[in-house]
Length: 301
Image 1 (cartoon, helix red, strand yellow):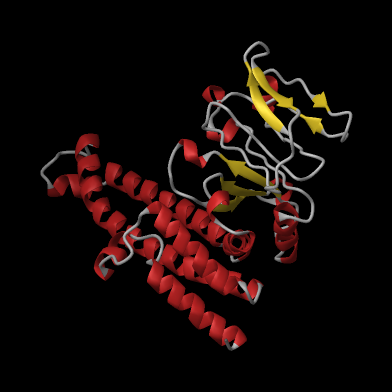
Image 2 (cartoon, helix red, strand yellow):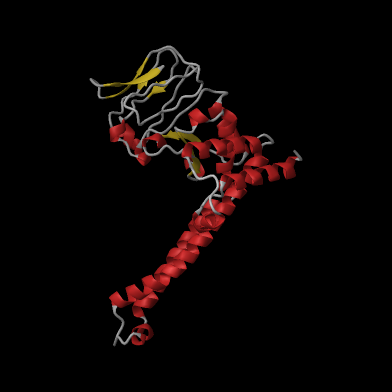
């Protein structure tokens, strides 16, 4: 099967073609022409309501009984409003991803591939949503460079962030931080003692804002150091979660990280002080060492 842009119909249309041997269907949505191949008999495309609103005409295949939706051209898409779903044949990557998610307690998830290549050469994966709205998202740049096992190990890491409540904790911290900032700003705006210290007869908004910005800059700097340190600790914790998910994931996750770093062209040996100041993720060598140490502690190998 293949999908090609039909200029006369002004939509992506399904075309008959020789089945490929990839076994995985994924969309490189940044390209003007999109070719898909699958070894399965059925391919399902899921579109968002925004995409369905634009020329949503479903086509059914008489041979396989599959339902196919037209795709919106790249120029009309935005990341949060686009066809980003992809399904792979049963028993292959999709089935294994969903089975892993269920086994690790990430229930009711759907699998999406997003067109990260349209914005960056970096590869990534993440889990988002809650309840019945959970999503497993893979960048289209991730699939060509990794084996199925490596993708599963990466997913184990991402599910670890959810199961260890890292996103929830960061949300609570963000709310508390915003409350503290607004409370402090209100105090600065109404403080007569502060205005008197600078010989102002009464509180002035412009003076209060200047004083607050100066004072809060120091607080914000310290907070950024704490948040980046917490983020690095969370990455180590998610790595340990992935290692504990399967005996093979330690080696696979290390291999996947090497491929990600190579493709992203990051500095592999940053100065420790620079890491302390700015890095939200630990350096590659530190992560791989921690993964191997936990693998040995957990499984003895």
